[in-house]
Length: 350
Image (cartoon, helix red, strand yellow):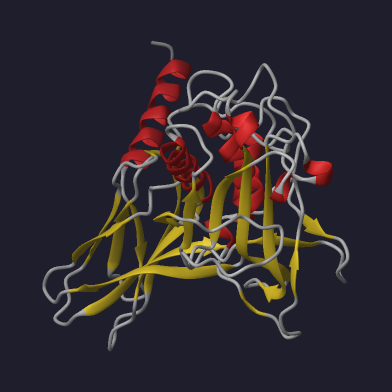
């Protein structure tokens, strides 16, 4: 082996050894904290962060935090028992995301605070297609500033119900599947309440089911699919309170309710499930994209395309869809009421 190859092999060995070791930080008293972070985690697969620090003679508090916008948000808290020095934190892996996480151990009587940070990636079982820039949020240009956009508060679960009286067989199953895929893409939590007789509406209403979102099938030319929307496959209308803010103090229109109407006539042309084209799950995922604050795009390989083409993303959110979901999803953090009060207004994407 030549000297150059020997040096190259030695450097690779050193680098690989560093990558395979748990990361460590040391406090001013020399007490280390070692954190074993997982590599890329398939979505839905349990994953943990293992923490080891020098055993103390008293308990210490430890937290798992995540970077959301500009803030570190505490997700879990554990007590490091005296004389033990080892704990584990369970990571949220039910939805795809890439974020910075931090383990922080609170200072003791004489011990300093210890912390270690790393990036965790939760990945999908398929390779998303298309351009990540192929997404568009729903903005409300009538506000000042004009770039106010809408999204749900991801710090509370969103309840939904289904009115399938005019739907074909398997509709509820497809709605549940679409909401599961929306959660995987966005991190927003959804809770199914069951079937309902509530009717979808283009204006804010009080749903007797207590749902935040109602998905319902309607006759073409009536209800939400009348007027210029006659002949549409479906339509989603999110309703929002205009004056909310995020952790940076930026104004956000908080979605608090949404109605999704599916044409009973067009439903006859859709296959149930998510395999054969065209299928109902794909349409539902498109309308749910509107319900969480995404608009149409022109990229044919994205779910948020304004039509259902012959070549389709086929009921899988793709690169642009996922990038859009990130802008309205869990990693954007909680919302709080703004200083100007509330001003409920509907948005009307198709």
